[in-house]
Every structure is written in C-alpha cells, then in structure tokens.
Length: 337
Ligand code: DP6
Image (tube, rainbow, N blue to C red; front, side, top):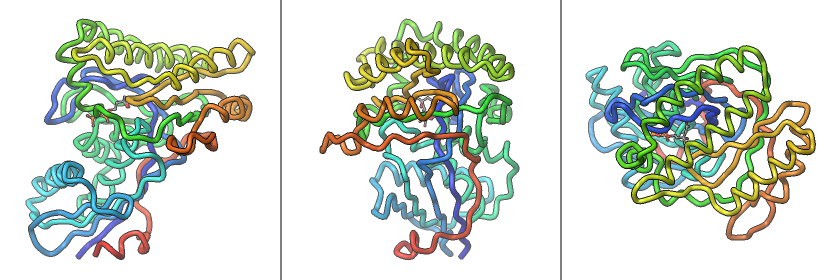
C-alpha cells in the first residue's frame, strides 16, 4: 500500500472564475486571478489499497456524502486512467475552514487531493501539470496549487493551468457571516448563469479585460487599483448570478452590511475593498499596514456560529504556499485504514 499526505490552502479570487467553456475538462470561459492564503487549510491523506473497488472518503473524520464521495472517485479516475491503475483508495480530508460555505473549501480540497493522490499513486508532476490535474476536480483548485498571487489561463486543456504572478504584499480579512453550506452549489449556479443570463456574454468579455488590467495593477504594485478592480468584478459576478433564471442570490443582508462598512472604512482613509465568492461571506482586501484596523472594524460583524449568532474571531490572512506534500498526519487517518 502506498500513501501520501498534502496540505493546500484556499484562494480568494480577485478576478473571478464564473462559467465554463468545457464542463468535462473544466476549462473556464475566461481567465482569473487569485491570492492563495495562509490559513483555513485542507489536509488530505490518500492511501491506495491493493485492489479495485469502492473508494472511501472521510471528510472531517466522518463518512462523506454519496455525492462528495462520487466526485472524489471521479477525480481519482482521472489519475487511474492515466496510469492504467485500477486500485481503490481511502481518502481522509480535514478542513480548517467552513465546508461549502463559499470560503473556497473546494479549491483547497481538490488541490490537496490532487497533490496527495498524485503522490500516493506514484504520478510525478511539475507544478503546471499538478495545477492542470487539480483543475479537473474543481476549477478554482488549480490556483491553490500555486502560492500567493496566481493567474489561471483560460486556454485549451494543456494551456489551462495556474502560475504565479508578481504583485504587492496583500492581506485579506474574511468576515464570516454564515457557516452554513450554500443552498445552490457554485457548479450549478455557474451553469445557470451561462445558460440563462442575458448578461453572460458581456461578463465573459469584460472579465478578460479586467484580468489584463489586474495583471498590470499587480505588476505596478497599485493596491488601490487592485482593490477597485476586485470589488467591482465581484459585484459584477453577483449581478450575473442574480440575473439568471431562476435567479440565485448568494449575498445576504449581513453581507450587504459588511459591504457598507467597507465603504465607510475607505471613506475614513483606510485601504479596504470587498469581495465575495459563491456565498454570503465577504473578504476584505487590504494592506499589511491597515489590516489590524480593518480586522478590528469587522469584528462585530462576523459570527463564529450562525446558530449562536455570537461575534466570531476575525483573522488576517496573508499570502500562503501552494499545495505540497507533508509528512503523514497519522492521527487523522488511523481510523480510515
Ligand atoms: C465564485 O471552482 O468551485 O469561487 O469548477 O465547478 O468546481 P467548479 O467551481 P469552483 O468555482 C469557484 C467560483 C468562485 C470564483 C473563483 O474562485 O474564481
């Protein structure tokens, strides 16, 4: 039996990926750009058994749902087909952040799974090839293979991977307003936007333009411009999502309260710009110098547990490393083998 463990961190997109050109290969309609962060990691161990059969997937110490297990198996099949290896695997994964709540758990999840599964099945890959592989699990996962700022090229199957881009030192302050899994998965909502929103073509073409502007702003170290582009691109994405049939709305009243508070911080002279993925939680983009004050201002708006409604701790996230192998966290997987 062979086994390998990896860690990967979520990434928050400053230029969002929303829409696929090819669903089977997970090729995006447009490029995107993100910051891989240094907290809320996923740690995954893959143990290859000695025979074919059903894979087992443990998520946060418990048997995962049938659909999550199916998605994991489909991903492992990409590796198994490539290698002509039909052995089943036991996968054990733990998320430090909320799962399926729009805090990029699928990005860290599939980046960690790609890295650990490649290691366990004996597939040796450079960073680009690992990024391409992670993309097959979840599009945004290809960016978590890369540390810090990463651009994911649209391109064809071979060209569609993430790679590092130069830029300034940024901080993100996640404001968790809900830990509940989202009602509509991003995969489904993305398809709805593509198939039904009259604004979708403009979204795709303007995203290519925003990406060029963002790469220039990053190269110039122009944090205000990066912030402006980030916030307006996120709001455009939510507008496209809301304009689909049936409409989907991820931002809640609590999210809008955070957006208003961020605008007030800017009016008060701080660097603070908001973004939100497919969920109600908001991330505030800021500088290392302003991050402490931004976090303090956001403390009252975040909840630790939506059932309790109590204010939660607000963290400051910096750039984190790309997915990589780690020594086996034996205590996580003993029950699985
Ligand atoms: C809103 O990567 O989760 O976070 O490729 O279908 O698995 P699939 O989608 P996923 O979508 C992420 C969408 C987003 C924006 C982003 O991260 O760029």
